[in-house]
Structure formats: C-alpha cells, structure tokens
Length: 453
Ligand code: SAH
Ligand code: SF4
Ligand code: F3S
Image 1: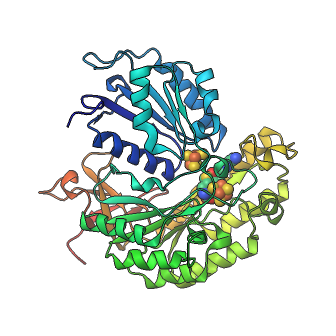
Image 2 (image 1 turned 90 degrees about the vertical axis):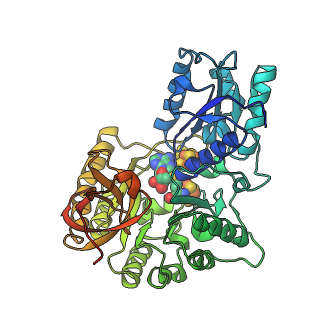
Image 3 (image 1 turned 120 degrees about the vertical axis):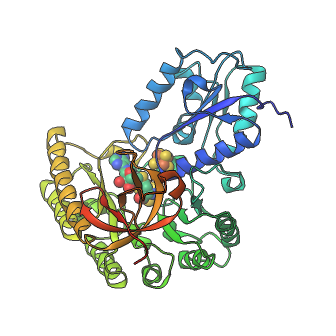
C-alpha cells in the first residue's frame, strides 16, 4: 500500500525519562506502520523528530542547540522531499507550543504529550502545505497505548499503566506537561502483557510517574497489587516497575516482592531528601522515618533487594543540617544506585518562588560529597554477589569489549562475561544464562557463564 510516507526515512532523538522513550517507540511504530523507514543518522533522515524533556534546565537548552544546528545539515540525495521535516514533541513541545516556532523558525511541526497520534497528520500537512503545523492539547483524549509500538528489543517491553501525575512535588514540572493522572483499564494492561509474552518478551517494565496510585480514577478502584498479580499470571519471566512514590507504596505491594515469582528483587524508590523540613517544602508528603520504615519492610520481605533512588541537592532553603540528614540517609540505606541531581529551577512550579540563597559552590560541594558516598556504597552493595551464580538476561555484546556479553541480573546490575565458545553475544541476546560472579565493581559485576547450577 502506498502512503505519503512510503520511501521516507525518519530518525527520532529522545531525551528524558522512560515515558518519553516509550512514546518514541509508539511514534516509530506509527511511522513504520505507514511505510517510513527508520535510520540512525540525522543526515539520512527525511523526518527528524525530537522527543524532549524539560525536567531540568540542561535538557531544555540542549534541544535549542540541536535543532538550530540541524539547519546546516543538507537533505540526503534521493529524498522524495524538497526539504527535511523537523518535528519537536514531548514535554518541551507541550510546554512551549507556538513559542518554539517563534524561536526556531525552521521547525515544521510541534506536538505535545497528549497527541502523539496526530504526528503523521501534522507531518503530512507540513509536506503538502508547508508552514508551521503546531498542535498541543490540554488533555489526552485517549490512552496513547492504543498506538502500535516498535520496541527497541524483542525480549523487553515497557508497558504504561498510568499517564500523567497528580502529586505536584513543588520542584517538578512533570504534572504541568503530562497532565492529570489517568489509569489504563486492567483488562487492557493484561491483554497487552499477554501479547508480549506470546511474542517472546522476557521482561516487562510497568511505567507510570507513580505506579502506586494506579486505579484511583477507575471504576472499582483496582489497586496496583492487582496489576502485579495479573502480570505475574501471564507467565512473564521478569517483572519490574517504575516509578514508586514512597507515600503510596503499600504493604500489599511490598509483600508481592516475597510472593510473586516474576517480580524482580529491585526497587527504585525516590527519596529526594533525608530532611523532614525539605521533604515538607518539596510537598512529598512522607517523612524520613516513614521512608526508612518502608526500607526496613522491603528488606524483611525480600532480603537482598537492590534499592535505588533519586536525590535532589540544593533545594531552596536546604541548610547544612538538612544536607547532612540526606547524607546520613543515603549512608544508612546503602543503595545499589543513586541518581543525584542538583536542584534546577523550573518556571511555573511553586519552588521557583522560594528564596534560594545557598551559593552554587556550596551546593556543588554537597553534591560532590554525596556522589563519593554513593559510589562507595554501590561498590559495597555489589560485593554481596561475589561467588554467587546469578541469572543474566543477555542484552548483547558489551560496549566495553565485544568479546564479552552484557546483560542484567535480577537486581538490575549490569553483568559482563566472556561469550561461551561456540556462541555469539548476538545469538544469546534475549536469553537468560547463569553467570558465576568473580568480580564486583561499583557499576557492574563480571564472571563466567556456567552450565546450570
Ligand atoms: N515521577 C518520577 C520521576 C520524576 S522526574 C518520580 O517521582 O520519581 C525524575 C527525577 O528528576 C525526580 O525523581 C527528581 O529527583 C528529579 N527532578 C525533578 N525535578 C527536578 C528539578 N526541578 N531539579 C532537579 N531535579 C529534579
Ligand atoms: Fe514530579 Fe513528584 Fe510527579 Fe514524580 S511524583 S513526576 S517528582 S510531581
Ligand atoms: Fe522529562 Fe517529561 Fe519525563 S519533563 S522526565 S520527559 S515526563
């Protein structure tokens, strides 16, 4: 079937969180479905789409540079188009709308987080009519998961169960660019999961800004524990989810780490700060003591569970004592991984109006001290696996050394091992192999593939 997209090539550049990465898979799915061909390099692409993020300032400014520099990249020879189509979507598209084409006049298409499905129509209009095609909606009319998806790997799938966020943490732009939280019916989630499992998917990651509040807007208010049970029942090998808000993590979900065969022993539980005063100013609605209690319960239910977290350093008004509380909390929990961020002011959020007088150097110093601690603790956490055999879901050849395979342990650690003789990393990709760990570093484990156990 000929469509206006037949013989066109496209390339998508994605910034930001898994939700954005997943939205990119949906866009790729749509464009491929219409006959367009994915390419890696911008030079080869007739259509370039940027899926943008504005959660911190750095991501924001990077986009403007990247789109501006595109102007000097000539269209490939043989392109059916007279000029390359440049589209900006995702969170900056949603936030800035028309403003984007004023600042970047060579942009053709702007779309937002609520209308991924309109992209082909907007591209078509830009090709046929020229000019700027800008469409940003205030709220989603349907769940974007009704769109097809082109997944990055055959054996892993992201599965959104909610979109949007109702939490309004005082520093965060996400509720403004992703809209109110909306849950997807449990039957739809289970049906999509079953299709993935039938197609050979080994690992499913449930997605939402706060998966723990799943279902509050649905008839009968199904809970997140019911989603976990339904997913486990599909027979999927590995189940993960992100992200969890500590205020909504229930005992029911914690118990599932002990009970469900497929639920992997790893949890990302963003703490943001270890100071009650800062947590209150952030509008996080839990205390340090509550968070530490969750950690205790998780470790009782699932000894050895790998915990990871997000921390913001330098929130407005953070005192030396507040920071010490955060430092002590990170020290005490002993995370496998901590994503550390320096506070970035986002216009339109409540925190942007808060007095922020801590000098940059002081914030940087706190940040550097925390990063050192995070590395020490991550190194120590990984030592627990020395000598044990872990099941590794192989992702392919290691980027560090092509003779090694790379994959993920149940705790989500990166694992390297020499490719067994007679096989290749590519052939093993997507399978689960047992690896005996003989080396444990800060950010990876290494060992040898063993035959059974
Ligand atoms: N919904 C998820 C992800 C939010 S964005 C969650 O609640 O965990 C991912 C991380 O970015 C947040 O956890 C937070 O640590 C960080 N972040 C968000 N806004 C920020 C800001 N204005 N400055 C610095 N870091 C920020
Ligand atoms: Fe942002 Fe808070 Fe919502 Fe996460 S829970 S997306 S940090 S407002
Ligand atoms: Fe960024 Fe939007 Fe995700 S702002 S973190 S891409 S929801």
